[in-house]
Image (cartoon, rainbow, N blue to C red; front, side):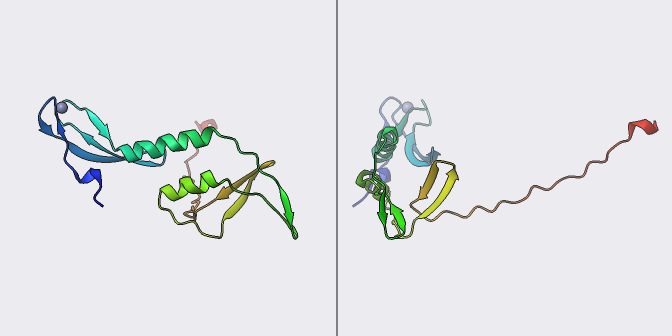
Length: 134
Ligand SMILES: [Zn+2]
């Protein structure tokens, strides 16, 4: 199936072919057409949809039960969240990363994180000028 983005859109006002762009907005890939003449923008409907879906999902607060299984506790991740992730055709792995963010707050990472390399910033040694000497 070909995507609508393969199509060239002509601005009906200027009768000019639009240019295709892609940008990242809050982690979302937004494909768009832009008229070089009047600057009108058409966003890809599917990209707009996933952004809207995310907004709705973000406003929700889920209540899940904490259950004890063996020596650990488990919680269920609501289906909506998993289905949303699948919209992006991301493959969910069975191994999920979990970390304690702050007291009372735990983060789950459904996908492999790009390990961040924390580089210690180079401390530039400043030549201290001793004012007393002058
Ligand atoms: Zn135009």
